[in-house]
Length: 345
Image 1: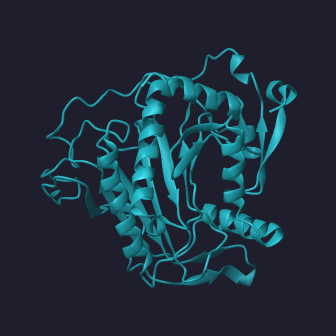
Image 2 (image 1 turned 30 degrees about the vertical axis):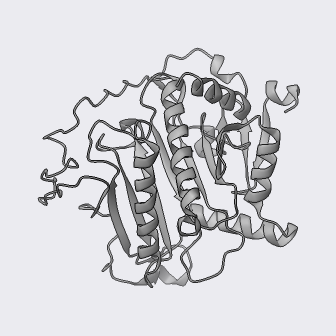
């Protein structure tokens, strides 16, 4: 990246969302007298009798969690989507303004481990591989249903990112409709394939691996980069080396590679500010709408909020809400910080 770009405000194009992000280098040098966050307490108990996700405990909804010994999946007691939700469409006065429609789906919780004190960063690659296998099974099952068009796997890690329980777990929301972010990415990847006769994220992955300046971690099957167009301070995108549309298309070796890259990324995060790093992480497989999607390249997003320290976060307010996305440090400097953090592991 040219020095003038590194030192001066500029815009970068995100081809995956077909939008721009404002990059404002050195903005973090401004004085900070705003809100600071409390650092999360490290879970010290392998089993917490008060945790409704620990094996055998009673959940808030009145059901008992099974005495599981590995990964564990159950229907969300407070699901945002329900399979029997009534289907309807409405358009008040036919003006296309006050429009609504019914939406159905399935929401499940996946406990990564029976141990309350673990996170993906502290789990072994073999333990994470078991999680990857469950994700794959869930995607295949839910994606095979006629009433499901998308399966969104995600994890909110840390109270700062809305996690209601520190026990290592994630969620799956399978919906009848395609979520907004998926619609946007689908449109962009399809347009790129039609215009250039190649996969957008395949081309991007090749460029990042060749340049190396934004690569954070890699193995034979996957690479993790701070995207050129990243919005969140230490945002990371995980990409398979081979073109594949979803988890079900991964080989056994590639599932091992995904488990390894997830362990590398999360363990590196924990070294940046020496705390259990908060983030929202999500997998983006191709839609399960019965159509062929040669344009879609499976990937995962990590969106962590911390910016300056363990107690100062990035707020998406003001210009970010009313104008467009903006970041305070360059992706290149963020990638270098992560690479240096990885050396401390």
